[in-house]
Image (cartoon, rainbow over all chains, first blue to last red; front, side, top):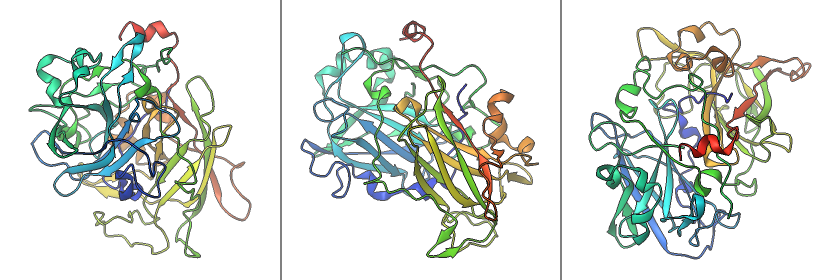
Length: 177
Length: 237
């Protein structure tokens, strides 16, 4: 039996290191890594539509060749700001092998920790316009009407936006991983 | 490439449900719709490997700038294992907590209790080859919160674990044995299974205690392990 999760609470910022939102930071583990530089941003809202301004957002994704190995650590952490917004700088991941010789479309795993979440919730960000989205094994498990909650839109050069809704409305599809 | 071995899903009642109305903040934040069960791929079966070169360890919260923090110095030590009993080695453990008066070194914490200039309340340690970790701190204080009338959080220390995969990522809280606030705390009691709840309570340990220095508490943490058989999870994939 595993230890139960407990909420990160409202004071998790004691482990907030704002430079971690830049996966490519100069003194970090990925300094100088080559690839397509992107910004991932979005807001988080709650069941009342209110901005969630105290969340911790983490990302985890493959390198531009779709690999998870020691050479590139596609990990970032960001606090949502007073506008409920997170913003990461990283490299765009490549397609990742799926189960049973399938191929997954490029994606970024997102974990949200916050007061009011007894355990974190997990979702994925996909990139609008990727041909592999049509055949992605996970996207195909999601009812078609809700898939758009996982697909980021290009909003500027190299900038992708995905707004996340914790509860109600166009609720984000969360994953039981 | 062979498929990653899936991780086990929790037994019923052994994890807190997101929808737990006794904890008021869940009422606007817990998702209404059930999550989609995702097969475990490389994305779920891998994890960042934090190197102390980029993430320096800091194992003593009890001293800041050479000055001792106020309060009762304690040592917390334990092991991080998975459900199969295997040590989780070389893994980063993040820790944060309130000071001895029950106040966080945090701009949003306005509890009327003193801040301690010699206590920040955060640490970062790494497990060794046997999954062992340890840090020194001061015993935190209880503090009020507004969940319900006269609500107080039991004394606790927050832990963040990464394990070997994103599927094992976990944030939890360590509580202290005998705390009279535990039976009253909605966050602690949202986990229905009593044996699972007890895993959140540290044990006083004379072997961790250092003579003439500090009491010791043992807090072992179990992360998810592999599913009993790959087929158990494949059925849901």
